[in-house]
Image (cartoon, rainbow, N blue to C red):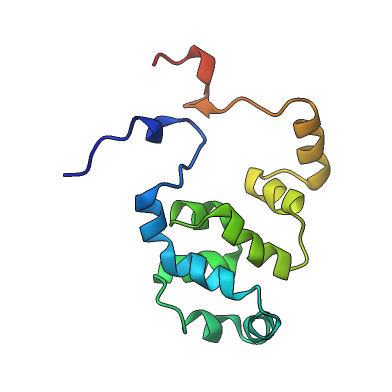
Length: 131
């Protein structure tokens, strides 16, 4: 029986702990491979074939193909490894983060420069939710 993780209840936050590291190991190893130019070229030339060389789940592979970074995080991806994917696509961290929020790059930048946003739980501000 898994231990209760109090930190797992932080609204709007995916905690990368040992369980997530285990779950995302092959996804993150794939991402790390993109640090090599020849691997980036192989990936870009036939993404599905390259992904099939890795022992990732089908969900993880589909999330990569869809560039669904939120899903990759939920499936054990570490944002610093996922950065290898969006960097390979010519995207900045800011562009990728904006896509994860459903905002344009300009909207995301403005929101961050204004102090960010509060996470919400069931359409309530976190400050209104009891412990």
